[in-house]
Amino acid sequence: MVYPLPPVFARTVPDGDTHERAVCENCGFVNYENPKIVVGSVVRHQGKILLCRRAIEPRHGFWTVPAGFMELHETPEDGARREAQEEANAALSLDGLLAIYSVPRLSQVQLIYRATLAEPAFSAGEESLEVALFSWDDIPWADLAFPTVHWMLRHERMVQEGRGVAPFANPPGEDGNASPGR
Amino acid sequence: MVYPLPPVFARTVPDGDTHERAVCENCGFVNYENPKIVVGSVVRHQGKILLCRRAIEPRHGFWTVPAGFMELHETPEDGARREAQEEANAALSLDGLLAIYSVPRLSQVQLIYRATLAEPAFSAGEESLEVALFSWDDIPWADLAFPTVHWMLRHERMVQEGRGVAPFANPPGEDGNASPGR
Image 1 (spheres, each protein chain N blue to C red):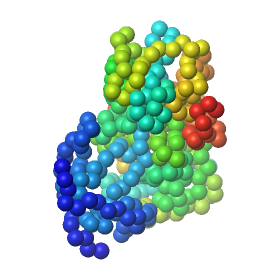
Image 2: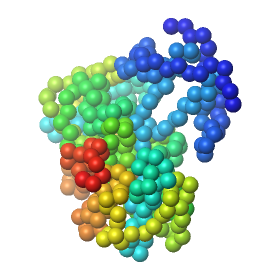
Image 3: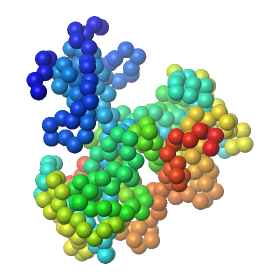
Image 4: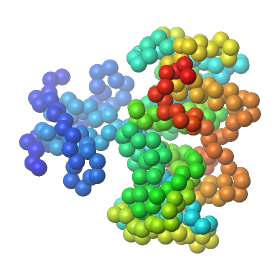
């Protein structure tokens, strides 16, 4: 598709705002840029951990867990399951939140769940070169894609050893839509 | 400022994407809408809890904790401190993460911290009608702004009674920028 007028964004503070935003000089559209939420899972199966080798940049060819950007109007849990389906053709059963990490340089907050395979099948999705199960000793530590992957594997190990805890989250069955009196 | 060509957004699936996005029909700009992160704090001072009465919609006139949208390139902790400064002119000392809530209807994830006043001073900021300290028995339960405010006050109480725990987060001093080998 060809568009008549490409966007031209300039940094300026819109009326009534306190921060500089990207404003299109042609149309005045304010592109509010917000930090992004990454949802993902440390997936266990028969004592091993499922990892995906990235078919995309950044860190093409390095290993990570199934994870990606949360979409609108999904719960973080649904997002974590969707990403495992997309990247590893894997159906997950989630155990709960493992950890929350922030990467301010990338304006990212990561919500990482503990999970198991709901079915033993998995295979590489479009964004993965390969998907495999690793015992702890065989995890390719030198070829992990991101620092946060190190953190979550270490934290998963701590939980398995009984040194971890689950944080508070929504009360069971609640989605924040109930009347505040409940 | 007057702009020559107001934006016209239509929902369509961009090339190579899997989801419908808002695309400007004039310029082709894709407005990726992501879930938003709310950062806030349950603030204690001398055995009481600090609450703000909202001067803005939604829920004008109802009580909430200092909280708001996280900005780019700040940590959630810095965002929680900034919001308390803006809404309650309060300087906080943070104790750690209390809870993570999701509100899929609003595409919101809330990161709520435990905090104390670093200095005893506070006053209403621009978005607050008033700011006050409440003992547990005096909290205006029927006039709280949102369900999540109920949840976080209940969870704060559980932590104070020794029934709560802190979730995993970034290892001390780490911001996700280190080489993955660390």
